[in-house]
Amino acid sequence: MAQRISVVVCAYDERRWEQLARAVGSLHAQTRPVDEVIVVVDHNQRLLAQAARELHGVAVVDNDDRQGLSGARNSGVRAATGDIIAFMDDDALAECDWLARLEQAYVDDAVAGVGGSIEPAWEKSRPGWFPEEFDWVVGCTYRGMPETTSPVRNLIGANMSFTRRALVAGGAFRSGIGRVGALPVGCEETELCIRVGQALAGTRFIFEPGARVLHDVPATRSNLSYFLRRCFNEGRSKALVTAYVGARGGLSTEGRYATRTLPRGVVRSLAEAARQLRPGPLAKGLAIATGLAVTTAGYGIGKLQHLRRRTAQSGNAEASLPWITNTSATTTRSPQR
Image (cartoon, rainbow, N blue to C red):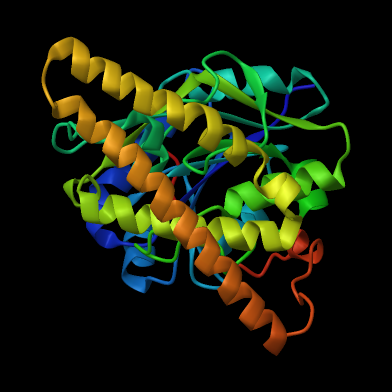
């Protein structure tokens, strides 16, 4: 039986309007037609009005949850009617066969979610010092991820999809972890994927590199300052993830990344510098070492901060299931093209 696919695109800033319109356009151009596109506007009434007025063939939804990407995604899921719910960023562009390739992996009932490649589209040229191992800093697929269709622990937010069953079992994206506006934090999708895996034994997530989206990387995110801030906040976010789901699940992928992928990256940089007889590649090796150190520092500080908060709070009041059936989100259906 054919499955319906809903795609959720979250937006928060009218200055990214052209990117949002382009993202929606790429979804309407899919070889496997999208059944439903939902644009969630995160606490921005001007953008909400513009999207309802100018975007066609979509449902425009106001985030009625906590401000931030987690709340916006939860609002999108509540409004979605699909059997499969996919997510793409408002500054991304889907290849025409994106949905078709995601859907193929769902022939296996054990698959709870499928994600694909996220390739950086640099506003300026890629900085020579920026290591491919750290492309996650700009929300993209990074060196060390599988190069063929493979099971993975978690998906990446700009290109991911879930079965409705998985989202019901796992619960909501957890607020307090994910991005709010331009604050460079994340890991809410990682925490959710781990939680789904714990709730549905035997299920798995699939990375399908052929399901591609291009992700804009503005010049403001291609400098060393952003690189360091993003690494630090990633460490803090990982500390929260381990607090909720345990260190074994929360750091299983990161352990291999830190002990295998990053050392290989440093060796590769040194070999390239020696082969080319120039110091440029050394900058990549230094960035790898620095990025790891800063991320580790963020993790340590995040653990301390969480321990302090835990002494002032008791338990976790977030519900895990009822949110999925909440239909209170304000939805505007735009005219069909």
